[in-house]
Length: 260
Ligand code: GLP
Image (cartoon, rainbow, N blue to C red; front, top):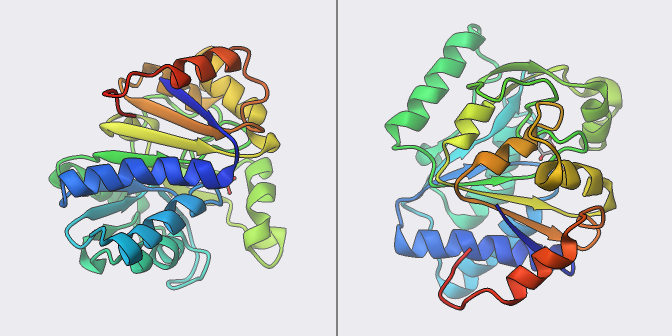
């Protein structure tokens, strides 16, 4: 696991976007895993800028959303399908036919979850997955106690996550209780995982992710087993890391030829 500690949200966004840009330049038909939440926003904004100003081209890329609420009406502005369309797919010019999302409105949710796994497999798997992290250490919507081998399935949100996400809805009561999320095992199969975390509210979760024991109590800690995981944080989110100075030292002395 590589830890990169930067000054602020803007630097984090630019660094994570550069990983996307390098991949899509070298492999225009790359398969991208896309997360919602506020953390990836600066990444998506920077990518949209690179498309506008530097001709980065996503027209042949494929996208898979990480998760979705269950039961929101189609087209609800806070459904993750809509958020990713608005914040990423449209601004970068991703072909809507190549953008996949779990179906949180399916009559048969287990069948829809299995079909989503099939879609990811048929696309050849995910090359690059961007992740945020919940204050309780969740990735996607894999709440504490999730099986670390899980596949795409329905989950029940903790009340803490519902409160954290209430800012996107009219009132806390409107946040759904249920979600469909790529499983931990699904996420672990992405060839490169880039997790972005910013702000002091994420410091404990980042500590658990990087330095805690691998445990379903902090699901993100499973990334310690991932062969290519990059964690990019600002100073505030890194403030509980015991070895922060070492991670800075490693990054500062990184050989030029070695990429993220
Ligand atoms: C939601 C999403 C996660 C995201 C988390 C943190 O729960 N399902 O993918 O990482 O929110 O969001 P934020 O980046 O807004 O703190």
